[in-house]
Length: 529
Image (tube, one colour):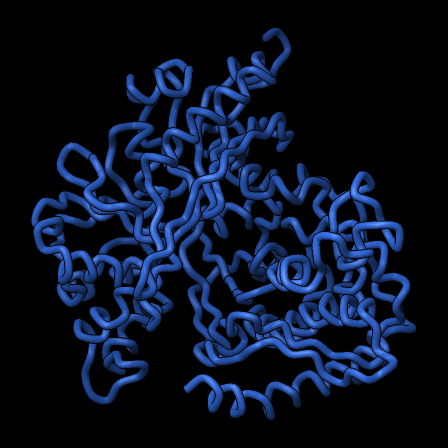
């Protein structure tokens, strides 16, 4: 272990599975292990995961890290987690789960939400008066779809009354992991956000709002105490230490929800410094000094890991999901894309094949335009009825044109979103950090630079952004580094500059793209009513 810097065991729990890495205070990520965790999709809009499966998987990935990097695991002094958000677990007085985790995908509580918060006049079934109070105090409001803890808790109260009676606390995903690590029941300033019961008007003093708590329909004593993301909430419990193979002296820092952690992992901790996360979905986020909400565009600044700041987040429903759709629904297992035509199976993945094809098609995809709304949209318009489409296909169109159009379509949607982001931040963005799995594509990064007309700085290790964020939050909490130090520690492997010759082409297509939304939105509402 001699010479090994102190390490943070960074937990990264997403919907697809449990991951963990070892992260030093300078952001170096050593080791990576993961285990899949199943998602159960239920009739009536339900989606659940077994929290015990998370815990079992965590023990397995830490054991994997120990076998691969024993010296680094022995150097662990801090544990910190980044997790999926908007999940809900009812636990009893002993901290044992009474329910599976009701996932952020679960919509079963939508009707319960409308019953609890209805009134006249109403918007999406909820009282406008209540919405105004949520916006003023929290910066947002419950999702009418029922996909957050505000609805999940009401579902348990109304549909599982015996469980509700035995519930000591309702915990988000991060909160349950922290309970298992330390034996302490807490929520962080960002994990509690989507219960919509907090007064967020002072970023360093997020607290429960008595009026919102009284109105939420859930007993006050079932809501956990709130801590900052950087708070040391304890040391490993004896059971957790044994499960992870670590000393009981290891400290646990509270950590953050995934998009909060990604904003730290991207190194964008200064004011109004945005990053683009490009994964299955995508978002633009930036730390800002003030609480603010753009109701029309669906953008808000909410509590985050930096105690005296907020995080502006603008979410797009589907980004990389469009590429997964291409892979799973358009390209077949014996497709020439996987064979002699472009790339053989031993030369890389289908996404590597995509990246080789895109430069062979000129900007503008030979006239084909794609709208990437496979699952509706969140921002800059909140419209669940929107769907994807290819436009302007002719007899001359080939599949390579369609492929480039998909990559460009996601970038056009991001440009549309950036109009609202620029207004929110008060100045046009000129340089943008990009991270997440989609950033591995050189071609896509260049398309974003050209379509947005901004410099794109690529994270040198974009797949590790959440783990790095959890590591850095843990390091800040343990006094190993400060948030102000992180931009200087961030490593980019390439900068993509806009290509001036492509600007006119993309400006013209973007104008058409905006018209397509205006004209197609009523059609989609009619098709999906």
